[in-house]
Amino acid sequence: MDTEHESALLLVAMYQRVEGSTQEYIEVDELPAWRELGDGRLLTLIQHLQHANMVETLKVASGMTCQLTPRGVGRAEQLLRDRDRPVIRYDRALNGLIAAATDKFPKHRLEVQEFLFSSNARILDTVLTIDEIFSAIEFLEDEKLVTVEGDRGHPVAIMLTPQGRMCGWTDKVDVRGFLAGQKSSGIQQNWQVTVHGGAPQMGQGNVQNNTFGYDLAQVMQLVRELNGLVPSMNVPEPVREQIAEDVEALEREAGREEPQVNRIRRLLEGLQENLATNGLQMAAAIANSHLL
Image 1 (spheres, helix red, strand yellow):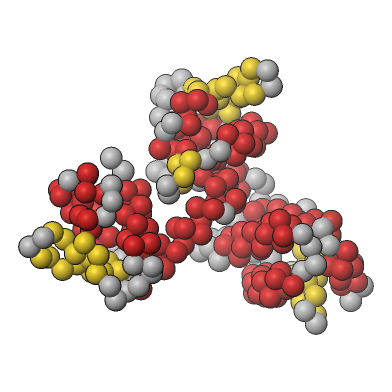
Image 2 (tube, helix red, strand yellow):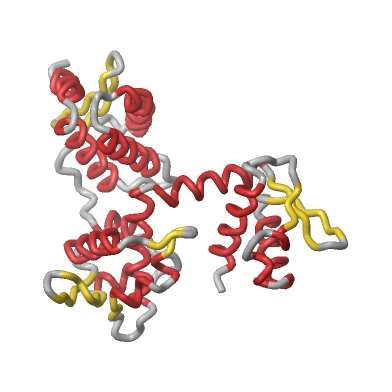
């Protein structure tokens, strides 16, 4: 049993039942498929959501009746958005593979087919695709966190390296966070991020006047400007979505309590490359900004 996962699924089912309303009551034991869990388990999940201020409850003779809170509505909408976002699914694949292999103590050898049928390969009510899993395995191998056994060019099993075990032997597996912490803290290139007239500007060889290596206020300003520009970019929709995901990843990292310098650097470099290669007008704006 996984209370966190099951309660998230229940929250989404409730959200969909009332179409996001905080005014309607839901009789949880009448939701399709959920009654099969039994009253005891349902009560546990409801109490879990209630403790997190996601639902309010009203006990009646026929069972447990709930009402979504604004916090619950927001969480359900976030879960549904994240379920379909490529960057979130990729994170899930990375972390899930390491977590599942860590559980294969002491050899830490995980077969890909077994992973497909595990809870680690699920994100909300969907299962990761084989392409998503193969892509994540390739990344983990490149970062020397796993070794791969293949057959006809396809991975059939992975085994954690010593670095992979260090990553997996934590309370909460976070592959990207682990890798950011393993990189050298020295900065070979300092990026200046400013905005003039709505054009994002990133230039090499500029040194920030702060000890962190990046002016986080300028990074967040870039994020705000790009969020305004993305919808009107004259690029194919998949490109626009990728740029939006890059911007969101940058915003998420910069907004952490302890941002990782190397992670921000890689995100800025990747974002600049995306902008430069996927839109002539945006590339020209960046090139012109180097002259300002």
